[in-house]
Length: 155
Image 1 (spheres, rainbow, N blue to C red):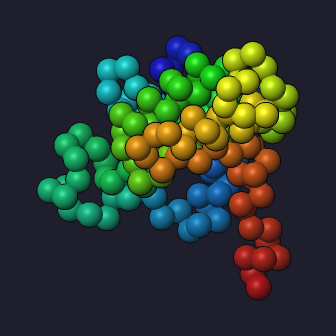
Image 2 (image 1 turned 60 degrees about the vertical axis):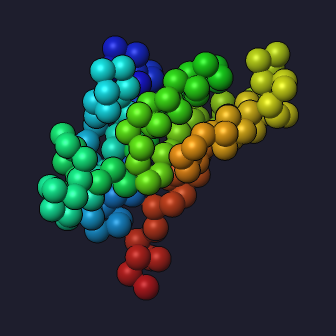
């Protein structure tokens, strides 16, 4: 997503906070970058790069191998999901992830989503599955649930 068309700041900031906590829980193995310019028109919101490989083995201009790229979308518009998929496809990470609000995923069928699924979330999952990349559509709640609690981390 281009910097001038970011998701509403409250949701964007909430998801970035969740991603930061998740990255910390993994032991900070990646180089996180915000609003990374994949091309002139494509700006994934957050990208985790693996910077351990020599520069000669990574694509020119990248700080490492793009492991996971995240697109944060607060809209239920399928057009915004298609744009998010395009942003991820431009970078070609090992895994793309579109994060949407749980309330958006649960929205019932609309005229726009009718041919894709029963809910907005199902329609978004369908569109992501049509990509040549591995793309997951997760809600903010599902992403947050991936962060281990202190009890689980310490045994």
